[in-house]
Image 1: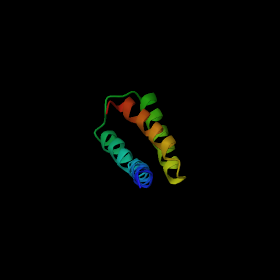
Image 2: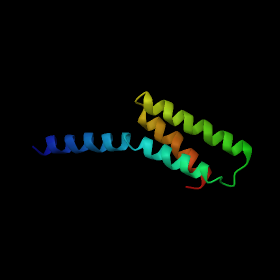
Image 3: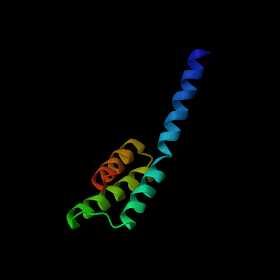
Image 4: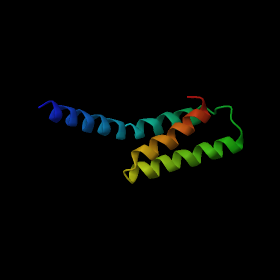
Length: 78
């Protein structure tokens, strides 16, 4: 029984994590609309990382998505 519960919790947490990608993208988009103080080169990198994150999310590669989106957020200071 404990193993079953642990397995269900693990699956639930993975699902919740996977569905956080869109929230991360929204946070990035909102910050970009506020015209952050970043260079043009940094903004290009941020936009590239955000696009990579969305591509990975749509492909079901949520770990890769969260990594790219996390890097974009770091560059934005969020």
